Amino acid sequence: MEYTILLVEDDHMIATDLVYALQQQGYVVVHCASLATARQALKSGTFDLTILDMQLPDGTGAQLQAQLTTPVIFLTVVDDEGNIVCAFEQDAADYITKPFRLGELLARVKRVLHAGNNSAKLSLGSVMIDVTAGKAYAGDTVLDLTALEYRLLLTFATHKGQLLTRAQILESLWDCAGSFVEDNTLTVYIKRLREKLGSAANIETVRGLGYRVD
Image (cartoon, rainbow, N blue to C red; front, side):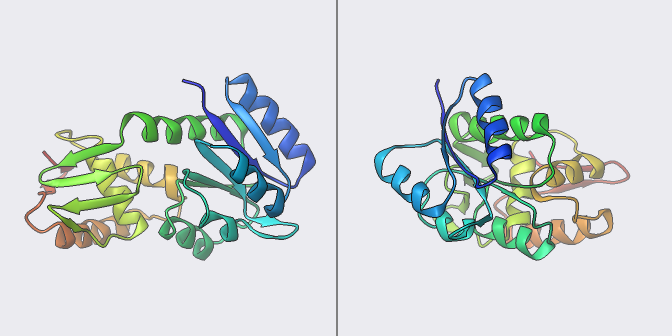
C-alpha cells in the first residue's frame, strides 16, 4: 500500500532531508512551508499522515490540526510538558522534539501508519477501542480518558493476556508521550484507569511482577 504524507515544515534544510528520507521509504510526500500552502494542499489531495511543525511563519500547527482527518505527528523545538500534554489531549498521534534522530522519526511514522491501517479496532474485555478516532467505548458509552489513560489502555489492549512489567508499560508510554511519565506515578494512572473502566475490563495486579489484562 502506498501512503501519502503531508509534511508542513518551514525549515528548508530539515524539510529537504525529511522529504528525501521518507521517499526512500516508499512514501509519497507533499511538502508545504506554511499554513496557507498546507490548506491549499488539503483541498486538492488526500493524505494518510501529517507531520506538522508547531511553529510556522503564518501561525501554529495547532491551528491546522482541527482541519485534519489524518493522524498528526507534531515536529517542534518546543520541549514543554504543557504543550506535549495539550497536543495529546487534542488527539495527536505523536510528538517529536528537534533536534531528532531521523531513524527514530521514520520508525514512529511507520508505527502510526501501521496502527491506522491494521489495528483500527481493538477490544479488551467489553471495551472497544477505535484507534483511528482515538476513542474507547464501554458498550455505547464513550470513556472520558485523558491522553495518557488512553495510551495506557491501548498498551494493555495490544498486549492482551500478556504480563507487562512496570518498565515495559513506562517504555510504551514514553514512546508516544515523552519521558515525563515517572515510575512512581504509574500506580496513580492505573488506579484512575481502573475507576473509569469499572467492570468493563479488569486490570490484574501480579504482585512483584507487573500487570495483566485478559
